[in-house]
Amino acid sequence: MDIKEIQNLIKFVAKSGASEVKLEMDDIKITIKTGPDPDSAAVHYAPVAAQIPQPTAQVGDVRPITESSSVPTTPAATENSKYITIKSPIIGTFYRKPSPDKPLFVEVGQTIAEGDVLCIIEAMKLFNEIESEVSGKVIKILVDDSSPVEFDQPLFLIDPS
Image (cartoon, rainbow, N blue to C red; front, side, top):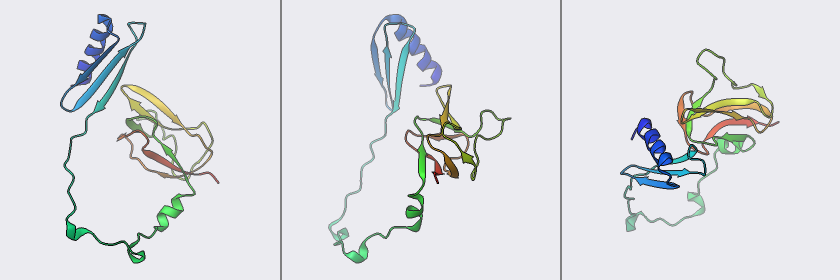
C-alpha cells in the first residue's frame, strides 16, 4: 500500500463519519481515528513483523555457567557510560542538515547548548527538528545522513562535562 492509497483512505474515512477504522493486511496494520472535526484524522501505521521460527537448543548445547565463562565488560562499554545518548523520539528519516545546500547542524567535536537543533527527522512529509536536551560536546554521530531511524534509536553521544 503506497502513501497515495493511505491518503485516499484517510479522506474516505473522514468523509464517512466513522470514528475509527482498522485495516490489517499481510504485512501492515493501519488504524485511522477521526476526532469531532471530520477534517482531522490520525493514522497509526505499523508494519507487522514476520513470524520467524526460533531454533531450539539441543541437549548437548547446555553448558554449566562458571566464573571463567562469564562475559567480560568491554572497555568501550565503560567509556560510553559517561556520555549521554540522544535517541530518536519518532520513526522517520534522519537528516544532518536542513536542506542539501545548507551546512550541517552539528559536527563531531562541536560544543552544543541545550535547545540547539541537532538534526531533522522526516516522518510522513513532516520535518521535525530534534533539539538537544543537554549542553556538552558531540562525541559521536551514530546514524548516517538520509538513513531511516526507529523510535528510541541512539542518534548522538554527548559528553556533558
